[in-house]
Image (cartoon, one colour):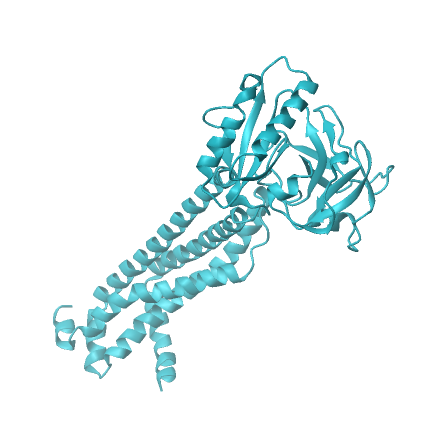
Length: 416
């Protein structure tokens, strides 16, 4: 019976909308634009949230980094000797689990980054998979808090030295699973000989995951290489330190104090010289977080503006059709009939806007893909947006519809 009544109301609803073409068209366009903009914006927000939620693969909560610059006038031999002494001192600090020296750290950015192509044959002409190099030693795995999936750790005798002008080379390397699978899709990377820019090397270990210093590089995100070498860069080095399950602040203070005996050889910035890995994450993804917040606010305002437009239009139409409502009530229309009329009317308007909005949302996504590193938006995203707009429309029209349904027939006719 209710379904039959709904179909019977369809003809007068369409006739009424035909008499208000401009207002109906404007609300429909507002719904369409809201769906197109909001669905794409929320999809970007979702991708940003996923992006900034990625794990580095390390024991992030217990790692801090000391950015250590060298004073001018030191030769590579002095630098290497100081690094050895510093690491020995850092590992003796109470609360420190392990430490090692490198040229960079996860989410550090492009400074100090080393990117190396990894070839399967020395004379390979095709472009090889690339990996981001971390200078490391036999303490790196424990400091990062990563575990070997396959293979072994570095041996002390495999640790070499590396200067900025050198080509990456070593007797052995440890790679992430991501890079290993790119090189050997069959899963047999362990023990294989590959070729770095500086010469051949063997893959002696594979770790599950280790994020690169770059925050925005899909091709290199988890394609990392641990190269057994100590930096001899005269500009500086970074010490990665992993603490035990203790408050980090006193350990950081003690670590810096342990470096003071050789303080005349180094420069550690008082403000930015020490950064926790958690702090590096906050800094690296600050822009992403701001964009996600701003787009979420814009989407909320768009939804509110659309709801406000529906409320305003519905209130206007109620005032315009008080006589019609009164006559219908006099002829036996119930409160539910009046409510269903206005809800059905709103549903038709929003549905027209949704149909156009779905097309605009897809076109907008295609356009954004040309200027923004974005994948094709799944169809369920605008469909969820459509459902939200349908519900929002029904909620927005409920107030004016309820008011119209409660007006007594005599009052409605007399005041029209």
